[in-house]
Amino acid sequence: MTNTVQVHRVYIKATPERIWEAITKPEWTQKYGYSGLADFDLEPGGKHRTRPTKEFINAGFTSDLVDGEVLEVDPPRRLVVTWKLLMSPELVEEPYTTLTYDIEETKTAGTRLTITHDVTGAPNTAALVSGQMEDVNAGPGENAGGGWAWVLSDLKSLLETGEILVP
Image 1 (cartoon, helix red, strand yellow):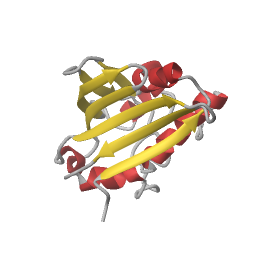
Image 2: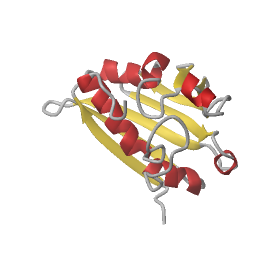
Image 3: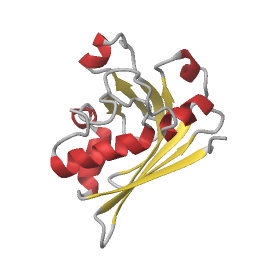
Image 4: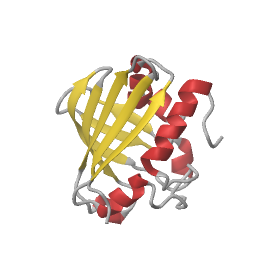
């Protein structure tokens, strides 16, 4: 049974502002994780989407990869969005999920980034983002099924070392 609310956390040696930019700016999002170009209209009711990079387009993914709406914005501390993967019919058929980014500077361990993903009613999305499908390769990124743990690890590596996990 897949949890309907998944919580993933990482501690990063970077400022909250730098992490916020890495989450919300396409020039950053194309560098780590699944390497899409994230666009956010950062106001409640605004749209967000992730467009394909050239590598995705070359692999046959020519339309948006992720779609949703911005629900809450408090830079550089909190971002809440609805979120839907558009990369397969099984995922498109599922309802929008709710994704929350909480960014909090700590006194001893850098900055804590917590992703809370409510995947209620979306079992295929839940399996993918939990990392249960880690060996799946669904596009340009290796370990495409590594889920949020993989994305957060890649983001941490990029911000702390300037290098991603899978070059």
